[in-house]
Image: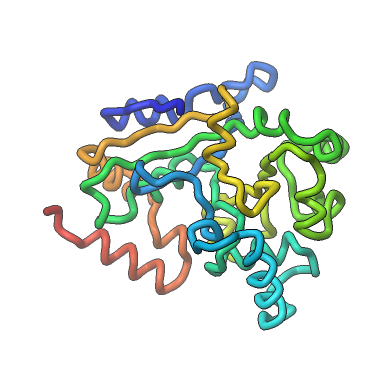
Length: 261
């Protein structure tokens, strides 16, 4: 595992924005996606894997029943990728993991839980250019045809109409990152995307461990969490922005006015 340990806010910023200069464009353009975890001991197991039991046996039942009981207006159009994104968004155990294009939003999720301020946090930084290079040829061609770096629901639909078809695209495991439709403010404000492994039982952390250069993990010491948290609030990176509505507002105010122990 490629771990980088930071001790200050400045060091964190240096690592979050490292390798973002694009000499061709003469602009800063990141090729990383980020995931913040409040406890560095946690890996990249999906909610489906954490549910227990045999993930391949349960996944189909969960998604089928979600589609059966949910309103058809829950998705923009009938696509397994739309349904999977909506299900993940509303807490159904799926093979997806939440990511963001924003390093500061990842830092928010690494420092949002005051209950874990006694533990180190971590921010996973994955180079999607690197992971795209390992995609099966059929998927790479779809991205090239669209001149795109990231999948959308529409592009994935061209590759597979079902998860079973997706899993059969290649014999070796792979990961596809895709942007969901802007179904509500949370998705938009969180600059959100998802990862999907080519098997419901595949662990992205284990897969990345075999891909040197594809990722780094920034470890944030527990002692630094309060400073990061306060500075993110000053930057307006908080629950009020990321979870629009009264629930997010209440979460922000509760945390903001909790005294430091």
